[in-house]
Image (cartoon, rainbow, N blue to C red; front, side, top):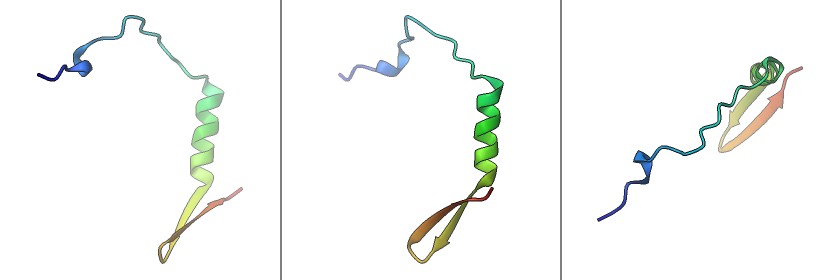
Length: 48
C-alpha cells in the first residue's frame, strides 16, 4: 500500500516572515507588469 507522506508534519517548523520592503517590492512589480497575448505568443512589458 502506498505511504502517505502528506500526513507527516515537519520536525523543524521555521516561521518565515518577509520584510515589509520585500512585500512592497513584489506588489509594485506585479502592478507594473503587463502581459500581452498576441496570437500564440506572450509579451511581457514592465511599465515604469
